[in-house]
Image 1: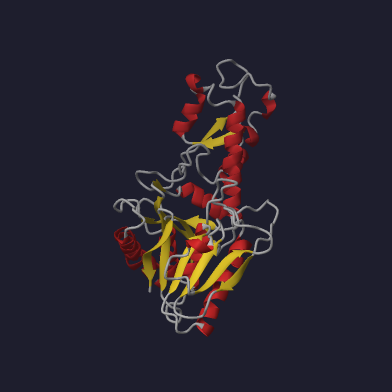
Image 2: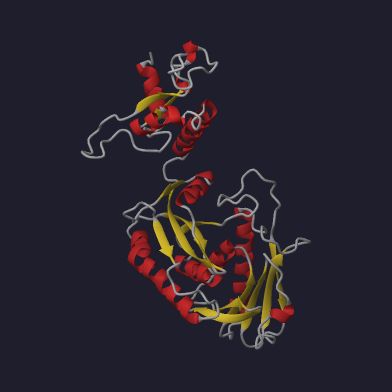
Length: 380
């Protein structure tokens, strides 16, 4: 028989939740009273009888009531894994993996010390002609890998702070009406939800996940500013994950600023980071501007994974700050800072955050339309 000590151990390791569906097992859904609803489910059946689910496994009978052979389950999931038609789907190996994955996740969450929680902001939009979104669990996993515990406040369906731009009219990237509509949606989210939560202390740290046309990411960053502590995430092609890689070689990617052109009129910032941007691609009317070109330092050329770590993002941010500092010091007469180019999405959020709209010239953002850069949005 399973001892009470084993049951307590199983309950703690599972965090009081079903290891299969994650249902909470310590509170009645109907009365909200404290009620224990968990069941001890055997991975290898208690007896060797053919009627015992997975009971003919070679695990010795004397070990079958140990916590390593038990997982905490709700009544529904317990019935699912033990019903005969499902035995082929829930093998010993699969159940052991589910148990290990769930209990490891609980242990990892509880290892995050107090004060390391973060509110999660996800902004869904359109890239190319496809609507894209960030999965809630993917965001939570990325945050946990970064040593923080995700919170999804300010929402009745606990999906957190969401800005959904996918409902905007067809995203013709040459039409300012699209960007104006998206900007209004972002403004509404800040005025109604984000700014009040920051001001009353509900949000003390923010983790940002955003997929949208890059001018909208710059605008998002500008509203976030650099006063609140923020972690910015991006999807990595190499791993198809939002988590910053922690077990890869540190390539030490850094970025440099090269200045070209005369110091008259407006100034331009060309980001040649994730793809090359050539001189002939600079829009007409900007040829005589002072151009600041940000590129990977050394022999590394532009490529999609050039920002592969928080350190690389910090280097990109430092390069952007260097450009703005030079503009502030030596180009005070510039009426506008024109921005164009190709960079990882996190860099565009960082650009918006480092711009001080009180001392830097307004930004004119040029998106690529039919092979040419055209102004689509302004950040004043």
